[in-house]
Image 1 (tube, one colour):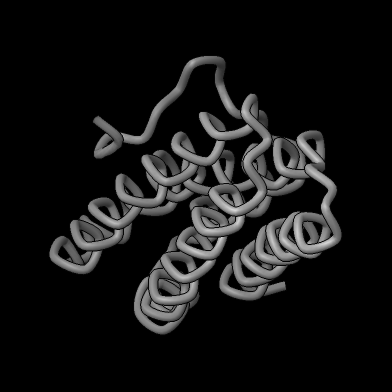
Image 2: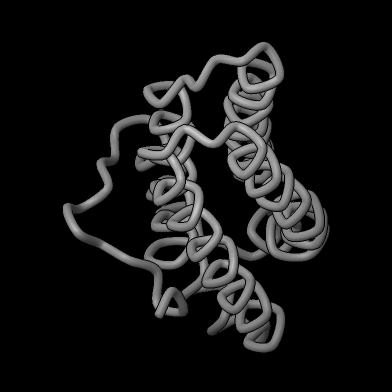
Length: 152
């Protein structure tokens, strides 16, 4: 499987988890465990990109697109933190609004990422670099307390 296909599949899985959370909210249920799983998947995905995928892409001459993706990761990360912060109150309207914001951010971000970064990955990664990406997707774990560079 191409690197882009594996990464795009992760985008779809993360989006599906967030959309399921929104459906539950519309039905009056706050599925904290479902949201946590979706956000954990998104955090792991961002880690994979920032620590494994982006460095060789940046070195191949795509520093500006990578910088844009990193900035957007920070915005997405802060939105995830805001969403988690709303869980204890269980305010479904606020949870719904921030969930929609996150999905909107992801739609814009993922579109650019898939068209630019992932195409570059398919065409420019060395075999060992591509293998590192796909191996992490299959078996990698998010390190404890890791935060994306632009989160702060």
